[in-house]
Length: 82
Image 1 (cartoon, rainbow, N blue to C red):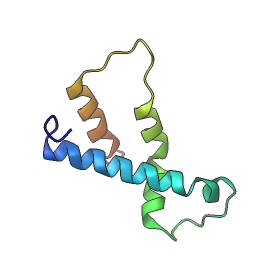
Image 2: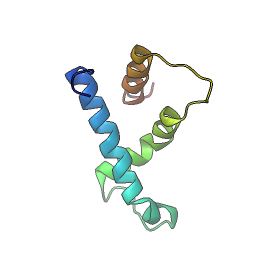
Image 3: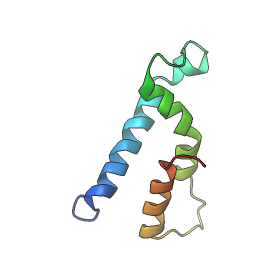
């Protein structure tokens, strides 16, 4: 992948994977209400972004997306909400 993507794109992908994995590792705590917000800043960030990350991963079977649009969407995902 490093031959196809820029260093900036690789950093975005790495951040996405890190946050998504951290959320998944703690999913049980979150779902039963055992996680207390503020005790893990990384998990707080992952929880805030999780709905947008899930949406980013969904693609209709007939939906076509080009490479540059995907990178732009990933960039937008991590941009602060207005």
